[in-house]
Image 1 (cartoon, rainbow, N blue to C red):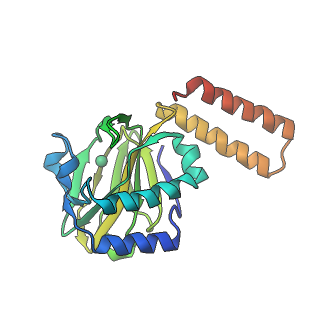
Image 2: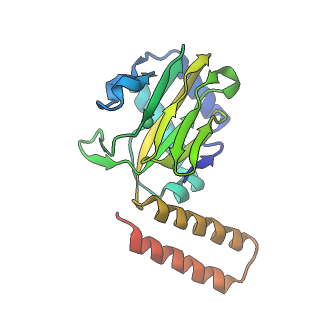
Length: 225
Ligand code: NI
């Protein structure tokens, strides 16, 4: 499931991140890529050891924490600390699949179920830079307003088109979901959103309660925590 989550960051947070990234020390993005991705990755990143990366990541994680849409769609168990990248001067990242298992800072591991890109540049400020996600329905080009997030299954092939004018900065990270399977996660998401809509429309409260019970019992059946 591809899901666009608008306004993840407030205007103040976005301005703060943009300002601090403008004067950041960027390094070659190939610092954090496996053998499969290295030949096709042409961008820059904040180094993993960068205090700025940690500080900005904390802001992103706090924003996710207060976002009910993100929680309902990703059902996050663990989130890898957010990273930050920049594409400019033709920078791009050819088709690849993200690593399935990633080491986290604490010496443990995280399985990548859900990939997220949080756009940080105004789309009018650069040309190209679309995130292209390929799935069984074809290719989807994604270029969102600054502060908005796209969430997609980590199993998808994806690429970032060359940035031919201006620069594109973004935050990206992976989520290990309580629900490993994308189709199950999608069913839960659809059920959750329709229950919420029924609740807001003052529908039969007994039926809504019963449906909520079904949702939670499916979550109980399918979740790994
Ligand atoms: Ni990727």
